[in-house]
Length: 410
Length: 167
Image 1 (tube, rainbow over the protein chains, first blue to last red):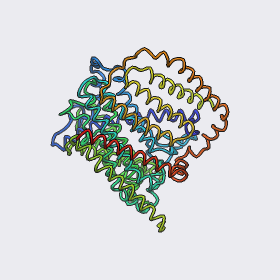
Image 2 (cartoon, each protein chain N blue to C red):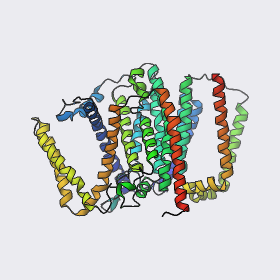
Image 3 (cartoon, chains in turn blue, green):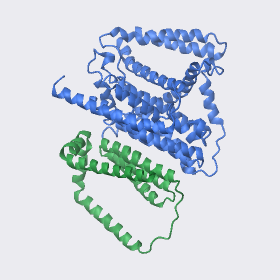
Image 4 (cartoon, helix red, strand yellow):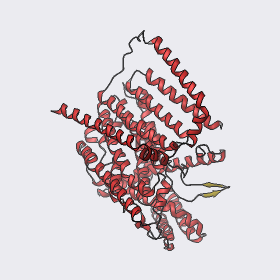
């Protein structure tokens, strides 16, 4: 009860955090589209966006403006209320789920308040269940969009998506049971702490090794849950035009788009937390020299951004890029020069975000590489292979934990 | 103490409005959506009582799984707007009487055990995940297993029905 009704100060801090997270997530979303187009382009030996700004860096801005200024017609015969509700629902649920992710363990002290990185309180005891609850509701955005459009292809896309999401949600939930058994808690922070029980093991202490089967089931189901390649049947353009969002234009389409990319980020965060040690460093705790790794990465990349920016004879190239580069270099230098506690503080978010970025890259990589499943293959794969595999994983994990309890490995 | 009370009344109002709208809506999908609102509002009420686990499961199972199936079936059958026929004249007076009786019964029960029910909700075993699991897997393990057996029988029945259709 106390965690729900905070004091007035906490309310302001939470509101500020919501604003910051919203801004960060939407910006990351925008640049995720740029990242995706660039990576897929290079996989296919193309340039990708490169006209608007250096390396096409202003392309997301142009796309965003385009979404705002496009005509937004409402097709005839739609169910008006549900038609307008669906994109709102999709976006709101996607953004809510990211509010439950903790990004770092240590609070910042500010005017007598401990400010944690992440919006939900760290002691939220049902963390992972709350996330699954929001995912469970996420189906409605897609299903209702398909139904309310009063059009054949969206309806088929909506039906496919509901069936797919119901099927893969089972696997998604079953595959984390092994992790939950090992941690003995639903709390996301406890799950990360459980992976730090042996600080000397570093990367070997992460859940991904004992739970390798669970991880594959989870990631596959998560990709299906976010409707991404190779499970993007709800919007298979060669069969269904654009699937459930065929009849949506302008900003309502953008809302579905942002929702999809936000769920990609959430799922990457979840993979990081459940299986890859969250904010833990992959190196053993005694290797303190690895704490300078952020600086080793930041300084050269900052210098490169400055050098690269000077190639362009525009305002953006001459001022903005070198400015960003200088900031990055300065941050890298500051982490070496400043007292050790600042460096300590940057460690957790640094590792967390690096791992999340890695998973986002895997997402894009798969999109550039894999063909799409056929619908019956998708269902057979989910029900006949993935779900049994995740159940076997639960049974195996339970046996190992029981055996350890009986014959006492501490 | 005012903030929880305010949230309680908001959620309670939402649940009641959703329930009434469930009956009054003409389209099955709109009714299903109203029912989802009721489920989510109930989950909020559980959260208010400190039962985080029950709240999450309420949304996952009822708000998510079951209602998605409802919506899915309505979409699949492409059910249209329902016709409102003239209401049964016989059902009116007895129905009203039953509503009054039920409301009186609920009010009496709450009045009788108001304080103890509140205390139970605050400290009871049901508020924690551990308490629930101990109840389900220790105290009531046989009824629980019997229930799962019942569900298994229902699944087998569904499979048999589906197979018969095919052949």
